[in-house]
Length: 237
Image (tube, rainbow, N blue to C red; front, side, top):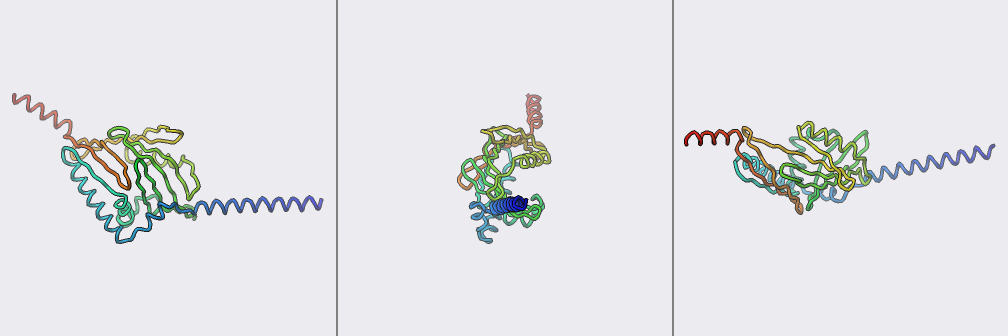
């Protein structure tokens, strides 16, 4: 009996030790910082501010071009986007980030996008990262294939991520259809942008290159305005 008790205590101690080692291993894995994120954070503050200002200038120019009838286009670099995330987002729009998240950064490559940010939930700090394939399935339909979400190097369940994307879509009144590609979820986001008295905007190109993203499209006159013009021309005849 005494021997049995000793063996039981030893076995219980071994289980507790194994569980502790497993938790330590998980914790260490959650603290791993992806290389691309560490590199993005190393940018000098002055360079970030210059890049942020350039991003704001380009965004303002694009907003002006989109209001005009005809074709428009814009090119944003990874440096400019990360500069804006580091400076203007932090200083002027910090409340737009979910609670507990900070310092988002992106890495852009042909056809793909990596995103990461610092996260603190329930006292646990980690770096959340996500790998996405981004493409325009057809005009005004943006496809986003979610290839993986991690805390450090630990894969996370997709359920919470998909629910968050769906919630953002509802808040923005966007139509999102879900598909599967090789077992990975794909969000097909239907965009129907209009500006200035209902001018329809058609996004024709979303192209990811090496550390840059290119956008192009066209803006047309409102349909009712064109109908009114046609009616006026017919009356003149």
